[in-house]
Amino acid sequence: MATPFQHHAAAQSTYKPPLIANENAFLGDVFSSEKENPEKPISCGFYRLEEGTPLVYEYTYDEMKIIVEGEFQISDETGQTVTAKPGDVFYFPKGSKITFTTESYGLGFFTGQRALGAA
Image: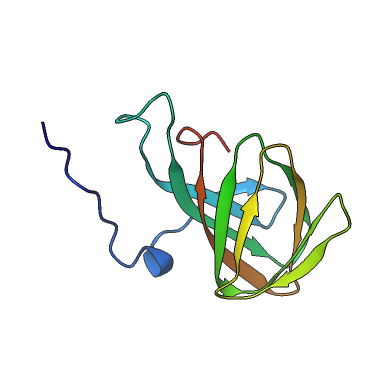
């Protein structure tokens, strides 16, 4: 039986991720393959950080993120720090502890090897 694809038109500008941490960190899944592939689901969506409290996040799954708007400062426990700008792509392996900060705002699109809402 065929499974139809899913589409969210203009998601970058129309999808508003919910607040997940502090006063300034927003994240929400747009789609997940959990129903079709419950053993190895992939979820994707948007992460937005606004000026304020840094977000420190320890990944319990592998994730890739592309910066689509604004700017982040992204650092890890090894001391590596990058100023992330639109078009930059990141891979965060399971177990990595990442700190996100911004002086204005940043918006990233992510894909993670996890179930819907399991971030």
